[in-house]
Amino acid sequence: SSGLPDKYGFELKAFLSTTITLMTPEPDFGYRHEKGLTAFLDKYGWPGAKNDGSRRFNGRHSALGTYAKSGLRLRIEHWDAISNVPTGKGSPNVLLVDPRNDEIAAGWSFEKLAEKWGKKHAGAMFVTAQKYLNEPGPLASHYSFGPQVHCGRGTSALLLLKAISLGSVYLDPGDRVNEIGQEKKRTQWRVSKSRGVS
Image (cartoon, rainbow, N blue to C red):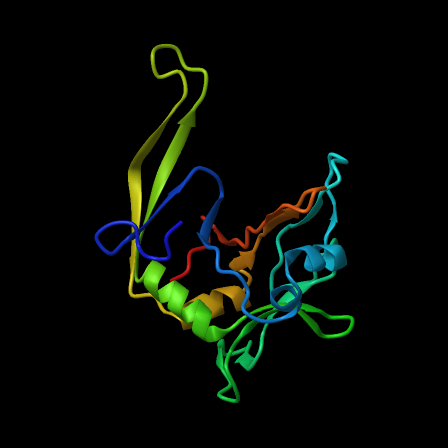
């Protein structure tokens, strides 16, 4: 959960499934930042599927289209989506917007994303993992790692924005507030393991 690389300057990412969580920075402007998670969930969330009195906000939000359940989509301001470069007319901040009224539901400044991305992913190791359940013997449930390891170096925040613009990197949150008002923030930026951030 640290904002720094895990070991020897490398961020270590083990992946079991088809998606990899890259980082979890909270938004630093917009409705959610200003009003808080509970107000955000009251406005943009929905009741928990188990009818437990909770409200949730999850699902794959990308720059490629509006997510039907929330009505929100990702957008990068001051970004040329054809050439995949900043326009130079302002900071290329990432926005989660309501296209019906252009309200910024949540926003991440380029400065914040660049700092987080640069610290965490200047070097990254992606390690395949396997989960074993109900196996015979003393290690009835365990994990194994490898043998495949993918090493990434020399990325940049602009490559991250390019991947967001192309839909390769997307917001897949797991936010909730329970019936007594306890909040759980989980702002996950993810990538499919078949689509890397070069």
